[in-house]
Image 1 (spheres, rainbow, N blue to C red):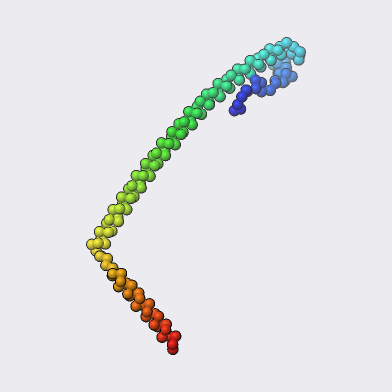
Image 2 (cartoon, rainbow, N blue to C red):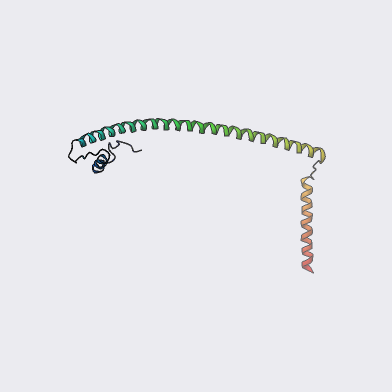
Length: 145
């Protein structure tokens, strides 16, 4: 709906058409300069003013209802966000607890069933150095022959 003043009269009535309808229904011919057209114009102005007031009242009611609906929608969005957040936090907490239990169960099973023993670091480095020396010696020997 447009803002501001509404036009009182959307369009002028076609007096020739009205005169033809009156003549057809009632058998009375009303010439264009007859004072009866003044009554038609007065009725038109009164109807336009009433329509303008009515549309203004409808506009005020619709604006109030729209503002109320916007407030309700904001509250509903906020409540939905809180609910989704609470469910997501609960699901994440449940998943976290389940993973902790699973890790603890696997850790206990590994500790009970297969103890992990690693060689000291110097033994691993020594094995790597011996292997590297063997590869170097083989390459040197292949290059001499």
